[in-house]
Length: 288
Image (tube, rainbow, N blue to C red; front, side, top):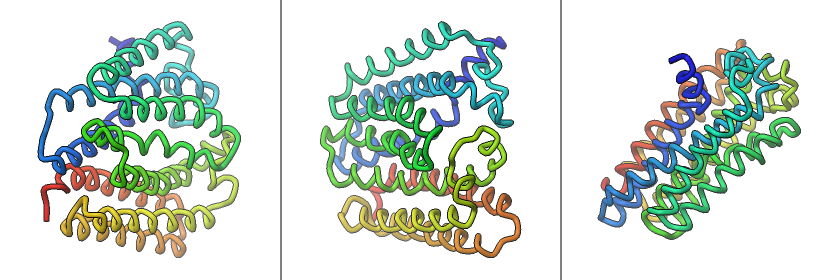
């Protein structure tokens, strides 16, 4: 049983869950706009996304095992402790990739398959390498995180249109403040691992300024999603309203005495934003 738990945690279930929810939201948005819900296709997308993301996380865990050993929040992982062999990791991760990509190849379209493949490669390799070398790794890491809702959307439409682009940009702008808040909260961990995240390299104030830029972008791209006619005014009120609250919380960060407590609050609110955003995407095409 303990071994099963180890493999389960290697898939980073939190990441799998959040990205699958985002993919489902993109799927439902496209379905509501098309006026048709294909449950068989929905099931295939969910299964494919779960297994591909889980596979990518398994390989990422193995690549990061040296980093994980020196970070308190990750030193418990089986790969960091050497409790899972390289062969076992590759067999487990490889099997998940075969199931995930195989399902998407059989039941979706080439645009969906290509988008998910891009997410896999950019997370395992591009982000995996960049995080050790540049402060821009955070931005690089938003690419795989922004693709799931796009994959869900294009699985229905078989077309990368303006809505798909806006879903991608909204997710990029959501992830950056979310990741920067983590970087501020876990400053000591990242410094100990010698990872060049923005708070460590450029300081807290610069990070707070960048957070404001991306929250502003989040608001703008949500407005554009409404302006282009993909969602209605209920979506506008809810998401732009939350975006403005998020921005106000970000501005208050310049007056706080405890940056880590503020970062924790920003992180928590970003999760509220994500859950609400996914829900609004899922029903956005049905609301006025």
